[in-house]
Image (cartoon, rainbow, N blue to C red; front, side, top):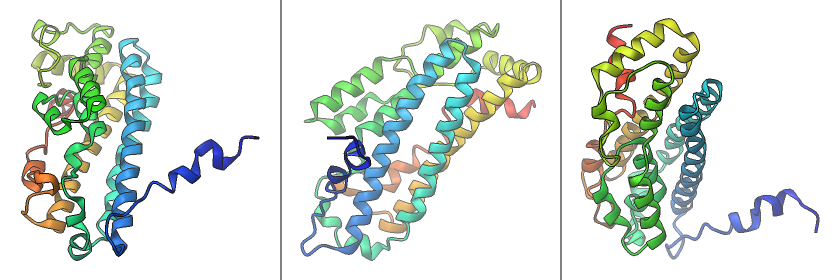
Length: 260
């Protein structure tokens, strides 16, 4: 059989994956399912792109990294914009099928958790939300033990003449990322001396801002939908999500702003 649009993209299987749990079907449940399935596809793509980006950073491939972060930045902003669609669902629309979600929760998105670990926001205790899903736990354990994207950023800086403090190079890979004055000094110098590197830094900051914007919009979307009530599956809902706000991936790229 010749390759067609439908069998190349497996369209028949794809559009058959939206199975509502409400009976009779509640209209808004289809929207809820499709939006979250699309998010999972975007998470898969952004991990795919940044897995290449980390290699480009470590290899001092400036232009390759610029292209990758431009794409990652654009995907991140698309994730933010998709919340506009989800917010067309009213609290009553969500309530009409919410009880059908049972123990299902966004906390169980292994890809988003892997994304967080990859970016350096490593919280080993979050793996417990995937108990019973052996492949997810294995993937998350692997991400937890890998060097984060920020560690590869340090490789890039090192190849640009920056001495990386031992406190950063010797830290456990599972520790979260923190700003360091020595890194900030180096970033300021590179901003002023190398226009190409400055472009990369701005794209990385754009990506970081997009992630923080998505977190904020996600909190507001949850609050306007369920208020202060707990999330599905016993999660803490908006209360927990607020605790994730304003934690940048590249803190040094933000702290250096006061000098530029």
